Image 1: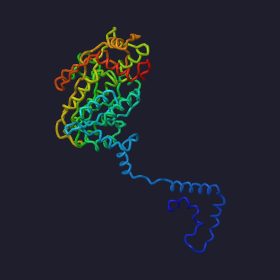
Image 2 (image 1 turned 90 degrees about the vertical axis):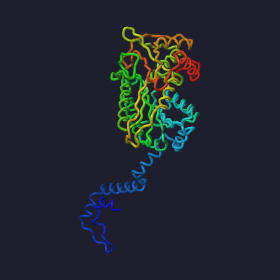
Image 3 (image 1 turned 30 degrees about the vertical axis):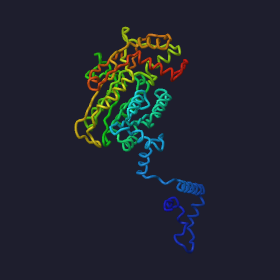
Image 4 (image 1 turned 180 degrees about the horizontal axis):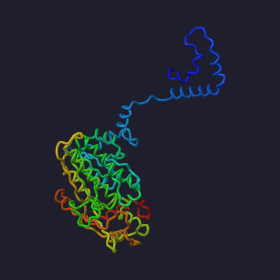
Length: 437
């Protein structure tokens, strides 16, 4: 009750200091009580509620207790047994198998890469935050596909540093396949901060977890052909300039390459960047042209085909998903070990960048013609000048370096790949002309 003494100080004159004969209080004490009835009432009510609060309040947790709780649960959406699931999913079939963390595992390339790794006997743990950039139902369907193959996906954000620290404590990853990113060129004009959050902050958070890990994993990550930006020299080579990004998305991917260089140089992380060129195929992304063209053609909606200045043809180096995944796995298999330990570099580490394309650019108008043939529906086309939204007119990959060092050799032409995509699309959404969203 010593806490209440200051509050009761105005009553001290009428309370005896010791047992014995009660002394008559001085007149001014009764005078104060007599002329402040409201003050007395409010003092009583304040004391009552203060005591009630003290009695009902739970004991405060210590800071250490709070830290233990965060490290144990990792994320509010995770089940209580997530650690056991992660350990089990990370276990390779043989001792020579890899143990790989795949970020963005519920994404297009992430799902295919995780399945390919699991199918050959590697241990795989996925990480994805299932954001709403495009339909989450598609991402959840991919997750179901991975669940059936024994790949566990942790529902969390790569910016969750506490979770990543805990994950690297419970699983000794030999490799990280970093595919999580905010994708799309045009969306950057609507939500630019999401690109910084995922492609810059998220990448740094992941690299921090990797460099503090012991042992440090080798890292393979998805850069983009977008880094070539306004470069007019074709085909694009890894030696070409990449300092003229045409979009914020491209700028964040270029920033990622520079960040990777610094972590390699300072901490000895083995890092390989892969510049993807317009990846397409089953389980693809609904924001890609081949995907929403298919949707709109089936629904009888008009599709917009862009052209460059002076009616220049817009073309892309479309690369089928299976070819890209082969390149990803080859990059993992040829990655050398990181040289650091617990954040300290012991020597120079491997740093690589490769183009993964098909090296056969196809005009977008040809893409539409192939879809019309496969869908057996005539498209309603409208030609428009390309808007200033960050897109470029032409992409073309020089894959000489990837062929030489990774054994990368794409074999799927556009019509063959689109035939497989259309078959999957009809199977997934049904044959009716319904929304793909």
